[in-house]
Amino acid sequence: MTDPIADYLTRLRNAIKANHRVVEIPASNIKKELTKVLYDKGYIQSYKFDDEASYNGIIKIALKYNPATKSSAIVKLERISKPGLRKYAKADSLPRVLNGLGVAILSTSKGVLTDKEAREMNIGGEVLCYVY
Image (cartoon, rainbow, N blue to C red; front, side):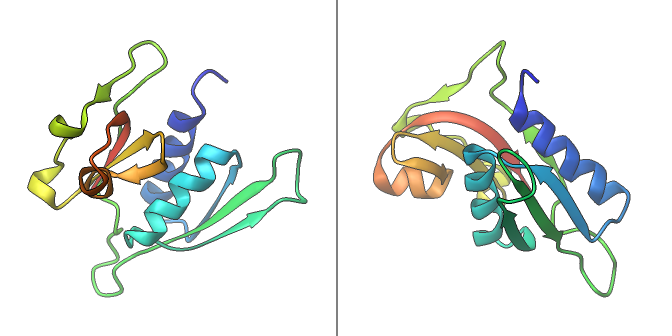
């Protein structure tokens, strides 16, 4: 697999379109950090790391839906930096998603952060994806 982050986002997108409650994704360290950021920002209901299932383990993610409208908390997941074309942002030019309503997830020297956290710490990094 050449792009595990794109596979992670695609599995989430497909589970949301099929209205699944839980999705299982093969784990890696970057995927675990992405999952933690999505949970902290309220886009997923819960998650569990199952390290005994396979070599790297499995991430079980419980997706979050609105009880009244049955719509997902995640409207769009968009991969930005790809293996063929990496996208980097400096601290003074970090992207804003939907004028601050969405979240840009970055891989920085301090770990995987959101655009707001990176702006507060005044560091840049690779823009992994947009979530809103």
